[in-house]
Image 1 (cartoon, rainbow, N blue to C red):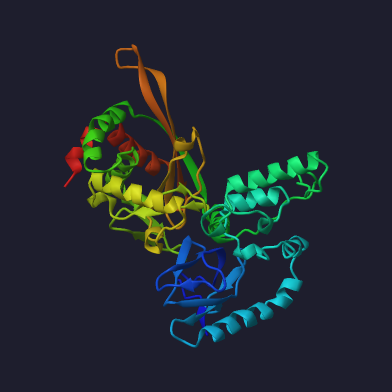
Image 2 (cartoon, helix red, strand yellow):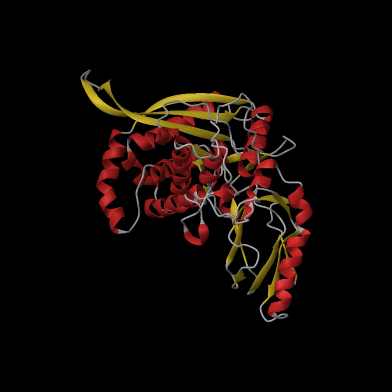
Amino acid sequence: MSDFKLPDIGEGIVECEVVEWRVAEGDTIEEDQPIVEVMTDKALVEITAPEAGVVTRLYVPQGKIAKVHAPLYAYQAEGEGSEDTTDEAVASSTDAQAPAAALSSPVEDATTSQPSERTQGKVPASPAVRRLVREHGLALNAIAGSGKAGRVLKEDVLAHLEQGTTASASGAPAPQARHPHADSAPRIEPLRGVRAVMARRMVASATTIPHFHYGEEIDVTELLALRERLKPLADAQGERLTLMPFFMKALALAVAETPILNAQLNEAGDELHYYPQCNVGMAVDSQAGLLVPNVKGVERLSLLALAREVGRLTAAAREGRVDQADLKGGTISISNIGALGGTYAAPIINAPEAAIVAIGKTQWLPRFDAEGAVQRRAIMTITWAGDHRFIDGGTIARFCNSWKGFLEAPETMLLHLA
């Protein structure tokens, strides 16, 4: 029997949370088969089997913390030992876990009396389903799963609740569903993974960087019209063209005119490091928390290439599966709160970057033209946050005016394309 130890994931990560086991003890596994999903400080990581065999023990329960270089699970490689020894290994691992079961919570103890004798960690279910189960004071093991490999679905939980209500109405005993607000005690959830990192970094940024904010309105009427004309061409190339590639390209052009916005102050606070390429980060509201992957070398990419990268990073971030390389090396960031309906925001800088812009929603509003006539225009609100240690108000105003000029007259970007 061999122990699989949690490998060094890099980035100084020493522990991670076990999000979901894809296998149970006694399961036969194939080489490269997904075994478990773990949540690091950065993203969700899928760990696969190094070789074929049989899982004999899961050392770390679902929802608990696993340490790097510590055993994660045990398995017997294919061809090692006989079927009898495999059965003995599974039986011994079950016996070894008996003392731990005696220390489980009352809810977990109650589940061991169920006919299926499944433990909480073995029942496959999504985080949303587990939350629903907790809110109603149920035991996940007591619910029959209709999904693949016995996976408990939302419909299974609702059906279980309905059965309980019917049984209660007929006088038969049924488990009492506890209302999530039946008492005043709060539900406690450990702050882990990406959210824990976000908490630490936002505190560090807000307390060590003197922020100042600068707001502006941008008329994006012409930009919207240009995008509508280009969308069919992008669709023909299999790319979804949003406004984000335009925001990024204009940002890189403005940075070329005001390079200090693409600089970073060293930890000692006595040197400015100017970066040769513009790596634009974009804040994504993912399942795991706030992630800010960045597109590398925006100044060299076409709009189609930018659209491709934005789509790839957005999809990866929403699944919590962003590569470490995509999270490192950002030089300036965009937070598109307008996609969620927000109009204004005061963003916090993604340290050690120098600035971040929050983009609000676009509204059709009346505006006066040069002759004094009222016109219907698409107005987008934006708010910059800058590092006041080396960026002053005049600098960010000039930089914003340059960026605004490219967005209000998008055809002018053609003059600067290589």
